[in-house]
Image (cartoon, rainbow, N blue to C red; front, side):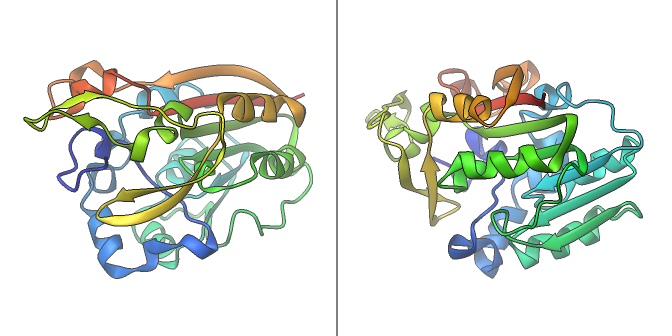
Length: 261
C-alpha cells in the first residue's frame, strides 16, 4: 500500500504523527511526502476534498481549530472563507515551517504541538477540523471529549479518518496476483482495535485501528450529534489515473460532520 509511485491510494493520504512516532521530521521521509500529488497541489490534489468541502459550515467571522494541519491547506481554506481566527497545530516542526511558508495569512497562527497535549480552551471554537489525524491516536474518546469541550454550543466538528475497512486491511495492502495486479482486499482482526504497523513512503508507520462503532458511537457518547456520515471515494474524473479504479473496490476514508448539541 501507499506506493512510492504515488498512484492510486497515495494521492489521498496526509498524516499527523504522535510525539513518539513523528517521522515527518526525518528529512528523507519529509522529502518523499513533499513529492506526493496532494503535497504539490494542495486541496486540489486530495481525492476526498470535494466531499469534505461540502461538510464545512459558513466560516465568516468564526474561530477555527485545525488539528494535524500539515502544510496548512485546510487552515488557509478557512481563512479564505472569512474565518476571523485560525489555529493550526501539528507535531512536526518541518510541517509547521512548510505551512508558514506555503499558506500564510494574518488570521492564521501555526504551532508545533501534540494534539493530545494541547490545552483546549473551553467553548472557544466554532469549528474544529481533523483531517487524516485521528487514526494516529490510541484513545479516540479522550480526544473527542476535548474537542467537544472546546467547541461552542452549535459548533461543528469535521472529521476525516481512515476507514476501519482500510485500517483492518491485511498489512493495509492488496493481495496481489502473479501478474502484480490487485486481486482483493483482505480484512483481518477487525474486532481487535489497537496498534497496526504499515509501510508508507518506504518507512514503517504506526497507526491505530478503530472499529466503526468506536468512531461513531464514541462521538455520540461524548455528546455529539451525527449530522453527516459519508465514505469518501475518488472523483469520477480521477478514475482514469493509474491505480485509481481500484480505489472503488474498498473504502479508504470516513467523513463525519458532528455537531455539539
